[in-house]
Length: 364
Image (cartoon, rainbow, N blue to C red; front, side, top):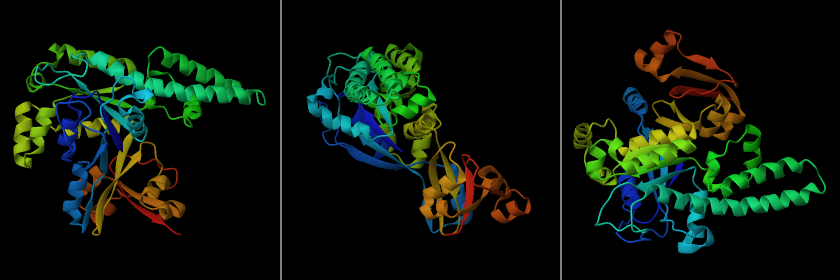
């Protein structure tokens, strides 16, 4: 999973990126501090994998990973190349989803590129740049379909759909808020749109606001309203607190989170939202050689999941020996689980479930 972090300059994006990844990206109180995108890869915490490691004492331990890309602050005119905009938009295009960091705190010490704090305006500024870039792509698609229509009337459907989507974007609405049919989603696959990418709004709050009643924060309420309207996720977060957490050891971190009334860190919450937003789950493989988590799309069948490990596994798939992690944990080991008949033999049509512990049988 590759998450691109975007936002206007000086909203706390690079500070949050540093805190989540410990990558040490430069962060400063002036626009365009980030020029080249910083990349940080983090391990996805998974208690199930930790418990499997204790059970097997493997030679190798490999959690799933998540890649954060800190993309330089966008400004008005990015779609026309302003502020190195074309490069920034290309960085976004490579990501699976967007974390849009929105400033929801007031501060005289940190300048805002627009001179005031207004989350709705900031979100619109970013969205419009993505929409303008998408409109250029869709206009070219429409022109091509009109030319093809002269020789094949089947392109009329494509023309009607593309024009409808253009009309939607022209109203200032991102493609992710368009009500696509399954057939339309198939049509648009060949034309990936920036404003169609799933979004997590990271509402960056001050230390005091984060610890108080969020319902009283008008800036956070504005972000919630926008997220609800377009079916996006919103995550209240304090970049400064996350920065403090990133420097703590596990024990101090747990105590600090408890004092805040939180069960998990911002990183854990971002990962959870990201998996949910993109429809991802993890299956597990375990043995003395290695315990490992593998990330797949929800709904993936066993042969395709096996192909994540190696293409030969999918090509020569015979069956999958599967047990739910909860059953394995209750039994204590595979031998006991097998004796109780809890290990199932599944075929090519089996749909993988989150937390499946699996051994694939194959022959090439």
